[in-house]
Image 1 (cartoon, rainbow, N blue to C red):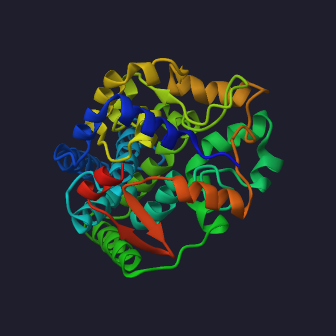
Image 2: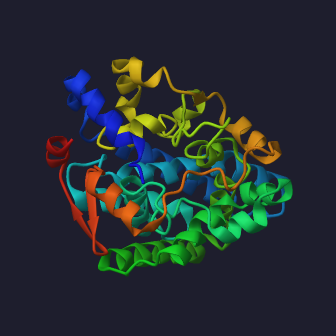
Amino acid sequence: MTEEPHRSRRMQILKAHPEVTKLMGHEPLTKWVVLLVVSIQFLTALALRNSSPYSPLFILAAYAIGGTANQNLFLAIHEITHNLAFKGIKANKFLAMFANLPIGIPYSVTFKKYHLEHHKQMGVDGVDTDLPTNLELLLLNNVAGKTFFCTFQILFYALRPGLVRTQKLTGWHAINILIQLAFDACLVHFAGWRPLVYLIMSSFFAGSLHPCAGHFIAEHYLWDGLEQETYSYYGPLNILAYNVGYHNEHHDFPSIPWTRLPALKTLAPEFYDTIPSHPSWPMVIVNFIRDNEVGMYARLKRKGKEASQVIASTANCPVEVSNGSDTETSDSDSKKSN
């Protein structure tokens, strides 16, 4: 029945360091990084159009290049979801759809609503679709089950939200689907089906046993008997992942873009240097699988309608979601609310 920790820490940091608001706002660099990574994936897919998907070259490229690139694009969409690439909401939505293209399956619009609910009502059972379901707890809470989960994480994150909390389709969903299907059809028509196989295989590897995929588990699973709901990671893989490792910082201030999250940590060391963080994403995967003290159950869960109401009434996010439709605020409005 307690609120998630990020609002409380945000209020404390704002009081101690009011200049933190200067870090908020959009980041123009994001669109150029997205353009670069989309181009890399498109050119790599074309370069492999005559290679067999079963060949070592194809599989290695899909894992090393494609898995890394599509993980980057997953996190680009995460960043853009908070309206941090452009000032305008529509521009952010279309950039997210552009970043979605090499992923092969339309999901950027659907992800937005689920992710903002994750911020506003973190850990609330039946609302935060980042939480494992009871069926997952029952079937996967052993070494073999956790290995399966880590290998097929992308499928769990793709299918679980629709089973737990179905979204009402909107015009934006339709646009996302149409743009993605048109891109996929054009790619198959002009270059054959192998480039599309490469892109979808890249998405699978990005959410599988890939070093960067460790962030999925690192962010909110409980470790070492601590009731710490969010963990950060400050290692070099952040370079490939829009600094998503700065996860406490991101949840505390969703209006601060990826390039300025390290500055937030530097600004308020008394808040961030005093809490545990993960030293390695790959080792998070290994330890999650082999450690009997950590499993699918190791999440902090809030149950009941009352808990949802308590948290919803105190949560703060730069984008508000209500009644199945987006009601969004600009950066200036979110700064005021912060």
